[in-house]
Image (cartoon, rainbow over all chains, first blue to last red; front, side):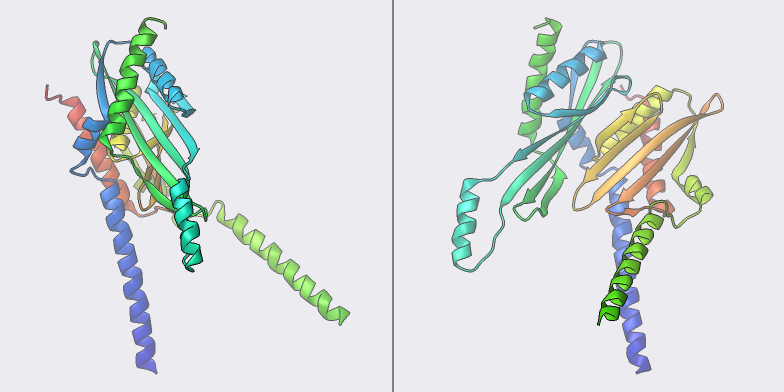
Length: 177
Length: 140
């Protein structure tokens, strides 16, 4: 009896310590630069000629509005724009599949809502150049309101498209269009 | 019969009140003392440029994969969230200490728990120190 209790306590202690070790490992990795951080920085950053940081921020806010984002916070003196966008991402094909599977007795929820969060930060490099860095993350909930995706967006095409639009917007703002 | 119903009703009422009180007690609860928390969450940096330090903190948070949720230059605060298989929310604040030093303080929330262990803060401050050093010594 005593042996069984000791065994139970040991199992609980092992589980608890491995959970704490796992959490510490996650936190260490989360708060230390990863080997991919330089690649991510290059993907998320573009350099613009000029020294008018406010003009770049104005052009950036305009592009974010073009893309349907709502501006949540801005701080010009730190060069920050925080924004988000919420959309219904229900795919009719997924809904049809979900209904078809229901007839076979299988319940499969489908992706329904998405929230994209972005922060854009400007940083003067010298008197002639300003770096613009944008980071996108997204969250997706299924039809049961369960969070199924919660991650950083790393597709190069998305960043290329954003910066292509920003280049045009900087030009338009410069010419007051 | 009526007496039993009344007793059950009173019991439920007491339980609801107790549960509410329990939740309210959690609102300002921490496991560590205020002094210990401040000490593990703060570091002193030898610099006086408020704006440069704040911008370096923002850049470091972006390097670590955070999306900046809010920044306030005059108050010297930045908040950001890192989304992965977990949620990591961090607020960093800066304030001057004398004429040539700044105190940087960070507090981290991991999913639904506050981080009150010194190790994660050491990692963050070490990453920030490297970023400040690299900025001070441009390679170009």
